[in-house]
Length: 245
Image (cartoon, one colour):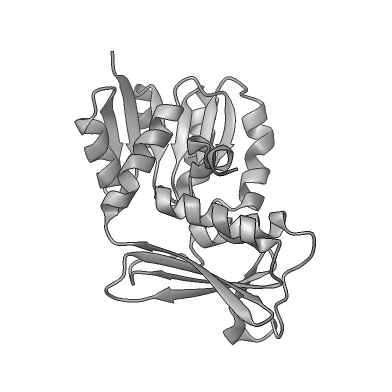
């Protein structure tokens, strides 16, 4: 028997892809597709919920899911470590519910972010340049925020960011300068640049097609049934750290 899924943000680009993948799978089916004008309670007809909506309503979707003991996969941008920490007490009140936060469903992006965290302890100069299409409203991207937070966590000292007070130096995220480009002709790209004495290292991930998200979406969705508690990042879902180590 397949598991029913409610998709919040179904009319968006990512939401449409999620719905198509679920409909094509044998182990899941779409029970409800919610748009911007939908009543969020319409999602309660499903066994699990996928939220790929907007940062402004994502917390409301999470609160609804927890209140009704519905496990939820959150792919909405804007869930920084600080914001996730703010809802941890609420998640802890519902220990039987699974909550997965994914900032980017690309497996390549998850691997690149993991490699960036591994390299972070060996360089003092680290900056991130992330590029998305002109229609992406938020900046920096959720992926860049997550990568910067992982870099900071991996280090014993702050990243060297001279003249960080100057606007052209980018936004500091967990002490790492992040530069956001919004341009035509681009889907997504992130480059983490490491500077050392006499050398630089660049870890770049480029999204060439939305198909790059497909495997990650289904892996995260399949990890949801039976999960208890919180899981953050596609790398945790795929156990990339264990496989690379």
